[in-house]
Length: 396
Ligand code: NDP
Image (cartoon, rainbow, N blue to C red; front, side):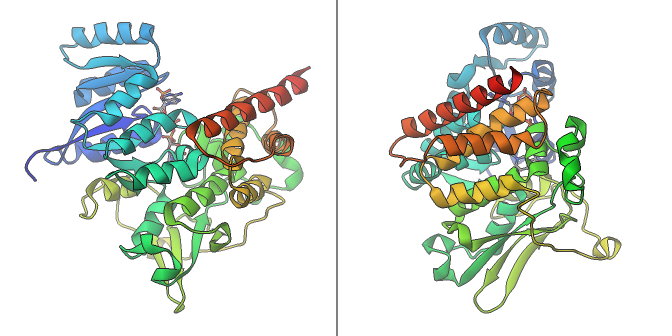
């Protein structure tokens, strides 16, 4: 390799961002940090800048930018601080960026991720919400570009690894019968149903197998994460919702499987550590050390599988329905979920009310066809309004 690839990490202060920087730091001859972005954790961003010395840092407000810029100058760094969505898209599409890790949480990641695609980057997609909300438009932008999209979600990365290189011609064309999307079932898989309304934020954010950001931890506990992943899989692999079967696998060792018409089932296994899919996508089609220890199957002993219980997990049912309805339904599902999860994390609603809010929003607003990004953003905004309205009624 002639020169290190320049990496922009959108959402550098988050769980995926930090894992990405860990992998990058193991391979200084291959990768250099080009830009790092943050939203609230500015002190952490400053620490990351001191450690990785990026060309750019991006923060949310001008005030944050002014303070950080002065601090970085004081630290003897030449890092330039940019601001807001414009700054995020600028570093994502910058001519000197080779690879963009899209690891902002939620709909806020949509525009910079699209900017990276339109600028023909290698895009490592962790920010599933961006694809879920804008599905067809996102994939159209990808087809119209020379960008390469590699999935970071461990399940989709596993499916990608189990598919042949020419899967883009259609799943049936390469002999795929089904995708088996594995799910740990989260912390409440076996809780008595009547206790779910008393779940605390701390309990919801404590995942049995993975260490993740707060929003995706709550999504995993409600199984909305698996619902979003189902929609993500449909777009990434051009699958129908009924071709994606969710299988509960509590150990999170098999990260997903592909079932072929000849009866073969290919699986990708590994310890539950996001550095594996990150390293895979960074180096693809090569392989590099990720820092993840070797899988010890003898110690694990057994692998279990169950069917998901949609009464316990109504979010999974609603996501499957949104995938089937298409149009603006996934964008509304995603936006209502973001508002509801924020409200839960702030202690304003019960865990079980996350599903109630989403159901209410989806019942009030019919899905319509999507023609342009404005349709997606309009549906997102309307779902947020309706969800906020639900919350106002609830707090009265
Ligand atoms: P975290 O909450 O840990 O990190 C989120 C990152 O996004 C932080 O850097 C945060 O900045 C930044 N951010 C938050 N809001 C905004 C905003 N409005 N504008 C710009 N930046 C923002 O999340 P995770 O790392 O856990 O998840 C990131 C994405 O990856 C999600 O889409 C998630 O679903 C996906 N993912 C995560 C996995 C995991 O193991 N964590 C596994 C698979 C997918 P700051 O911290 O400074 O506020």
